[in-house]
Length: 154
Image (cartoon, one colour):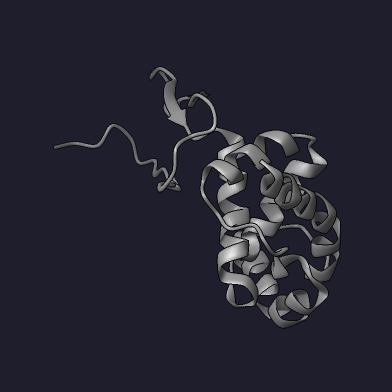
């Protein structure tokens, strides 16, 4: 078999499972990376469910979690104004996650403990974000805590 080109395409796929979706799957159009081939359409997890899964992991793993990328993802959505608190709270409530406590993941003590993990992840990801993890935690704390409170009321 002969290759069409010498291009290599790296694709990262993040699977989520374990609860129903809070809304219909989202259809995303991915442009072709090869000249002459059509775009690809992919069914994706709703954004609210993806964020809900990240908050669920924060609640379940607490201080032991090394998923610092989740904080960056949530911070990015907040900054881009694509963080829908109601939809995320609804999804979190539908997942059956216990929301009696607030996530330790957004506290200063978490940031202190996991700053080296944050620096390693930024270097590995080639990120241009120079903020300390404590700054990211401070930025996401209020919206994440509000989502958890709303989910507990649903």
